[in-house]
Length: 454
Image (cartoon, rainbow, N blue to C red; front, side, top):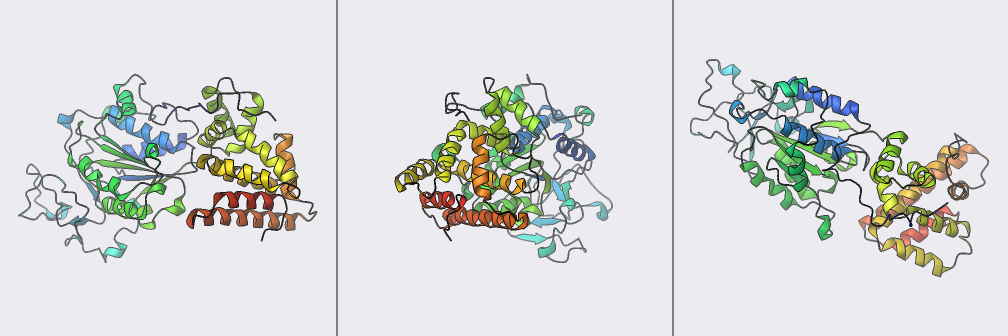
């Protein structure tokens, strides 16, 4: 097993989601989105769900570029408004009135306009109280207002957003030379708003202020007279107040605004947010796709390192890039040395390894990921003896130690699941109650090595 420390991994920077023109492995998701887009019944919010690093944010930027690049001419594009088709909710300050549109049949009207409201735009305010439209007799109460996300989509009475370019599109790909590419990369395109943690400032959470500040974005008309797009990467990173503020927006979405919500774990998201979105699930990438992306981004990669990255990335190219950048093979070598001699390992060596991992949060997350992957391999080995064939001898040694000497397959599998549950709970406690990471790492190594730490 050879370390990847000589491959400039520390300075490695993969292509960003904003720049990446390719989307590999998710053709069905692209087809589903295009089909909905062309149908005229188009959801205002899409929850892009899947493991971190499989291409959800890349998909979101790809959608945004497609929408902007295929936008109709502004003079031919009347502003339509988001409304639920079967159920209508209206705030005290939000109403729609177009003087050029008159209906003789009140049943055709989606809103019963107040004579005192002459507004022609959506007055968006997070502080507004919500009230039900009085002319919808089918509404029972506010609690079951949206019982089906399929009720939510654009009210495209004229379907004027469906121009020839959009109707004839077979994919979301646009010309790489389109000026939209550069504008999105530079962050200068006015109709796109990206909300994400301020990583440069060391922040990992999206605060409520970032959601409230969307009000300013919504107050400005689209430069193209078409959709505005909001990408939140990721909704998992919203704090509680920010999540509730986003919910309020999704309940009364602004005119012609598309929300693309990247989500790594659906269990982290409020049910009320999920119910107002169309969920699009992203599967893990095939090994062939991960291999192609690794070779494209790291042309000098060795075959051994390539194989290890494929085995431990678990179908996530983002994880593969993180593993490479953080020299994961050295972490595995150190883990092997400690676990092999865990009963005789000195406290000095244990603390040295734990301190090195704990002081770098990215390394700490990678360590957690590697531990889970080794346990998964150990469990799988009980059912498929060939699953370790592509792994290195060091990997196999760690897995054999974790597996133990139990000859009863069922007992061994149950024991491995117990180990995984113990370690998962340990990492969760460390996160929730701010336990020392060093202690969590040392206890994890001892547990993997067969030491009783319960």
